[in-house]
Length: 140
Image (cartoon, rainbow, N blue to C red):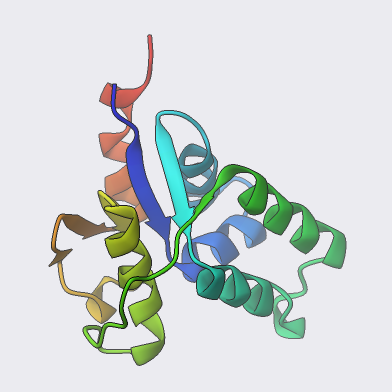
């Protein structure tokens, strides 16, 4: 079975850090486990690190480091082939650039309105949509 190639918007990773029993934590775990394959770019890793470290979020430094190390160990790093200007928030273009370089199947976000519904072969979906489509891909 082919892996699901996914890119996670920062809001999914932050929500996973803040809510241990939330839907986004499930998405985060599924994205790092087979049959999924998570992709990040150096720019996305930097944004994860910067946002997780915001004092207002009150995420313990040790937990921030654990999450980032888990992503570094399990996710595949790709480099954008070119810059895009597609999203309504210019800071979000990096996620489509990553999905494009990874030939991603899904970009998972809590801010769908920032993105087109599709970018080439990548579909922009919510956490709930991702969790609903994963079961048929799980090995029995």
